[in-house]
Image 1 (cartoon, helix red, strand yellow):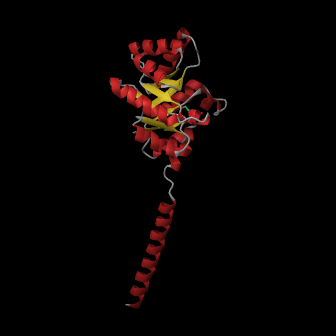
Image 2 (cartoon, rainbow, N blue to C red):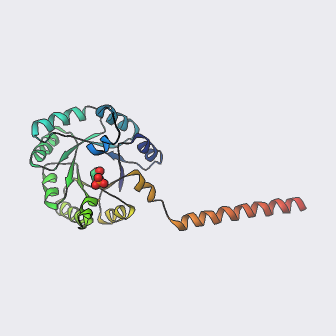
Image 3 (cartoon, rainbow, N blue to C red):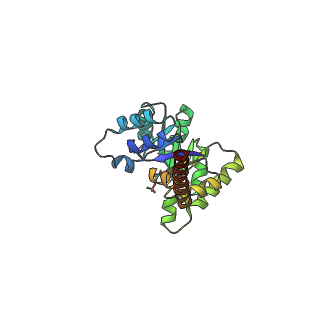
Length: 224
Ligand code: G3P
């Protein structure tokens, strides 16, 4: 399973990358806004220079021509850029055209298996079902991931299922059990995946016992 961080924060991306387990980054206009007064294209370039993997950058036009213009501009920033396209009618046209041109895409804002099927037919490289936002409206976001995986398997689509809007480690666990190809998550969630009280308690005990062992050895050596 590939792990992406869902952030535009350079320090977080660097830290995740330093762990050696980072496969890519996803951004969106809201995450870019959080970075304050930065130049979008320069910022995307900086992200691409940190991580050796796919970096999603989103168009903001909602018409075909505008999306294509932005997509060409974003794709020109760096070879790692994957153009994020919203799941609307004009977006489907743009996905098809970009696939024909060999520009990789991530189709975003997916909330149903039929949307996902359209995106795959249009040649999207990634489909991004938003799990947490479905949970937010008292439904089960992970069911969507399971259904998309099954639909794609039924017809051998190569579009990768990128579980997005992940909020906690259980989302990652269920996405991996459902067979999602990628989980994109906040850096904080990535760190929380490490947490287990028995790991902390066990390490504390090992280190304390090691100190006692060393003390005992020192005492014995002193007596000899
Ligand atoms: O990748 C999409 C993701 O950023 C949405 O997450 O938490 O805003 O629903 P969230």
